[in-house]
Image (cartoon, rainbow, N blue to C red):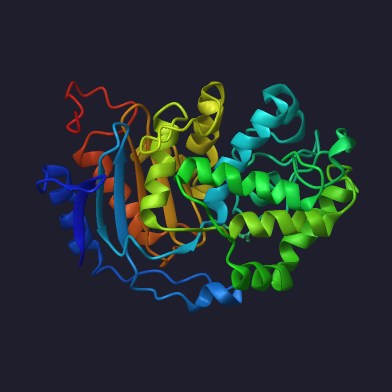
Length: 336
Ligand code: DON
């Protein structure tokens, strides 16, 4: 196991926080419950043993253990950041007319729209993540991400990820094409939205952008830096670049809190108590506002599509560091 704490190039002494991460890593690497996602053939090839944990504080300290340099595709975690970009592009009022903010209690892939408004329930489920921009036809097609044509939209999305992560990012072409050629369920959902007039016309283009967004390559430290950026009012704590307008942080964190863990969101909010988002890749991000971002990567998933080890690690971190947002037990947050 590799473990390290660094700030830029400076090695600093192992801290109590790093000791906690090392302990959790040793403890939970023995946990082999769950299974890797197989419905996208390329994802099934991942090594199930991979496991990393990273914390990045809002003052830019990095604590990481395990396979933190291993790249994987971001999958549904990307929905958080795409939602932020849609809010910046259109403002909250308009985005709310296209995508709701109600938890579904259903699986991420459930083929459902709000009966009354015909909107997807929230931006964290697949239909919400693909929502289209029908009234603003000037942007020609597909998602709420603005841009003249698919290339510009893709580039704007990649640039958004660059701001959060602090380096250029790339789409894994094998995962993208693997999902594009097998993503019939998402295609069915897109057709349902077309039927209700929530997607304008070019379904394949909307799906392509969504599949590309899901296939962006990240590592565990990237996840923690992205989460720390949300914890730090939208400013990347390493590069100091503003990744997203700070006015939208509360909107992003609110839907993460209520909808980010799919049909586990209620229990997560109850037990762990911090905004989070999981992906079928095995990644989880969790945001402790004004303190830190947490990233965990382990591809073994439970039946809801959340990383088994990731959920356990976040649960323990929340308890040990008193991170639950509503913990009023009188104890000062141990992290402070
Ligand atoms: O829409 C899909 O099927 C995937 N590209 C993303 C799904 C995902 O990560 C759901 N997360 N738990």
